Image (cartoon, rainbow, N blue to C red):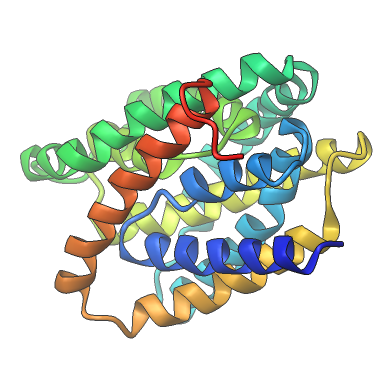
Length: 255
């Protein structure tokens, strides 16, 4: 294993963990970086999930210690997401390399728009209160089956989707939404990860290196001034996403 490659993955993991702590979107850096360093798209996709599992285990534990843990609602939404993730992971494993990279590039550009406009904040200000009627719960379960398909397939930027969906459908507070988000993601990320393992699509050394970087980045981000950090990290995100999308689409050659 190339020491330089491991070092780049570690640094990318640190930045991604920092990003995720301040807002989200870390996989928009880690997944393309794994591809750029020579991993096939499916292997990069599977490897990236090691860091995501570690990250969300820590997040769920922290929420639980602080008293924010809703297992019944989490399971009600997480089970459909798990079922969807099996389908999404199968698609990710079987899709052509070039097509996956183009889809990833397009998704990155869409997520960039969401990062810049932050529509979930607008939705949250319009919610009048919690509404967890049986009808809305059924709608949410159907939506999270789709979330699971997307998460099993590519995962990048799914946090924005979950926040917006829960805000519109349930009217829950942002704290409760984030608590449910990490719990649900942990459920379906683990199930989809099993599919990648069974098909030999995981690089364990790079995966655990990335996870270590994510953990360190999350620690640094939690100790960073949020207002200042948010401003600078957004500039970094915009530049990185534009460059990586151009590379994935074949418009730039970094070699």
